[in-house]
Image (cartoon, rainbow, N blue to C red):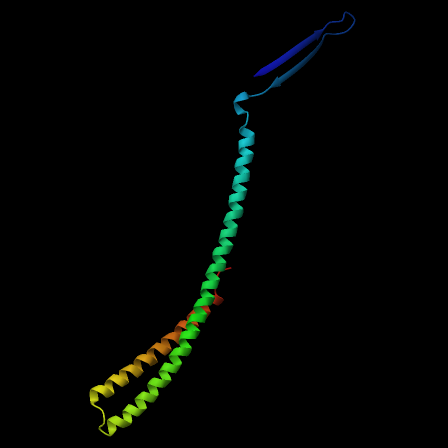
Length: 140
């Protein structure tokens, strides 16, 4: 839509004068500006929500790493007692084997059990060190 108005005033004593007023408005863009503003508001809100989600994800990841440390530490403590019991059982079995009170097969089974517990104990130590490193080296 376009509107214009011209007014010409002629005075015999003065030079020619002219006043013109013009207004222009594109009706097809009506509401486009408000839509753009609304889209920007939505984009800002989405950015805020994304930031919140990123912080929550980081917090959950950090909590997961801390919980993993606690779990490994607890399992390590249990494994330490199991290893101690396995060593005591092996010491008794060693004496019994030397006195021919158990078979070679029983002796080897007890030895394998001890070695299995030792391996698991040292695996847990390594897992614990790795979990601590993961926790300390987290991305902030």
